[in-house]
Length: 211
Image (cartoon, rainbow, N blue to C red):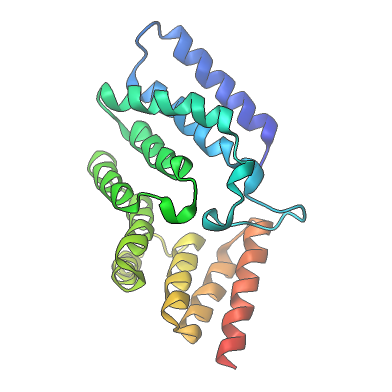
């Protein structure tokens, strides 16, 4: 990630918010909050070697609490004034950032927010993200059914995260051979080096279990 570009995007968002006057549109406020919340976790997303650290394993003491504190009132403001997609996405990010531990995350509320987001801005990516949240509430099997329905449409066949998500659900269910096949498919599509190393590690784990 380019820290300088993230900082510039946030600066421009704040500038637009200021230029819109005392009551900027809720989506402007929501976008600024969303950028602040995502950027607040930047330092915890990888280790010193550049390896990916998934959300539930991140050291939350490395999250930027100043940015989170700035963003949370903006989320409330955006939601109060008639939320659009950015505001809802910011509310989802806020629930992650408010949880002191991964297990404290309010996943049922996140599922409900994805339901709202699907109504406001239906897309296969939103459906994929919602399935991940469903897995945290109901377990991997119901989520896998949602992923398989989504995969059957073919809309995300070239998107590595669809296959990586399916692989992770299969891994959690102990279906190592199918998980390995999905990890291999994700690897054929991924371009980010840290994500590639993460997927390669997962693939090796599944292959070892299936040996």
